Length: 93
Image (cartoon, rainbow, N blue to C red; front, top):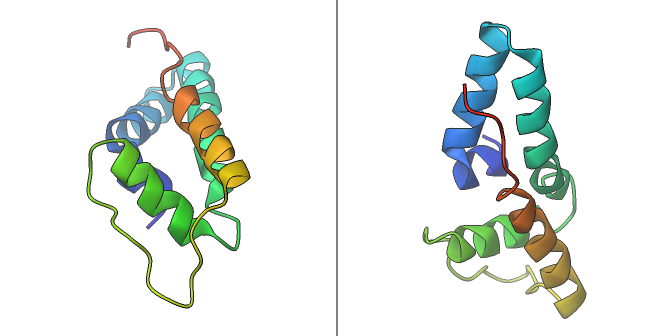
């Protein structure tokens, strides 16, 4: 399962629904909003990114176990930017 779906389940369902209708304008807007978070799913620290994202979003991600290392400050900035993108407005269905 993608870390994106764990962190933004409603947006992922909305994207699926928009693709089925199809409402491609809405689907593209949702995909653009999810893309920064999705890019983190393809990094060596994907577990750390998504555990931290879950914590930031009010879910329970918790600490990572060794040998995984915590996120650096620079990586936390990248995560914050990806989470900020989730707040971008998308036209109602």
